[in-house]
Image 1 (cartoon, rainbow over the protein chains, first blue to last red):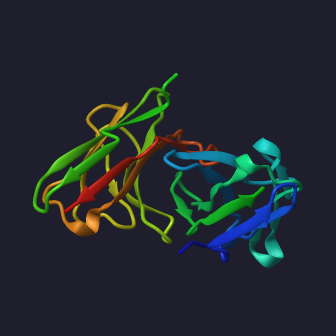
Image 2: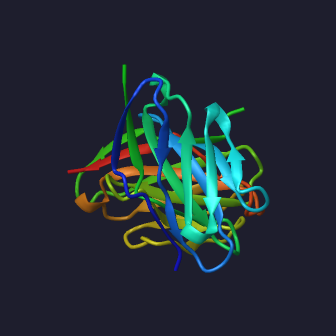
Length: 113
Length: 113
């Protein structure tokens, strides 16, 4: 069965610093991978997705993620964090058939001024 | 353009009471999903539907029932609420194309006393 692990429950960074959120997946075939962001009291918003091609994908709000098959990872990065990036971030993997997703536990990001 | 709308947004129930959560989408999506979100556990799939009149069990279906009588609506029912069902419930929808992301509602916060 597929699974997703986000090793960091909570990360704190200073505004302007770089950010990397880790995501490791377990999946038998080529995965479909997603990063979502959730602001307090809101639903999940898609940041970016990977399903084939270039392993470095660009998303909204200046985020990018790199798919590394050898490491079973799909880490999310941002060069310079803004205070508005404080939120919870979820990595998810999609099934081969259909559109079911399996989510990681989430990483809560705090941004210090 | 409303996207995915969930009603109600908040609800408090007593143990043993029943209720129905409504999800409506206006994007003509085939697939719809119900998740629950609990601290440290990410989102877990309760039930999903791949089309009008069809439903299927997800990861944590016990204690819940669903119906998809109309393509745009997906109902989640709790027949006899239990404190363990206190959670935030999210509805999502998507097309049949698995590379396309799921679109989420803003959630229903449910407390069971």
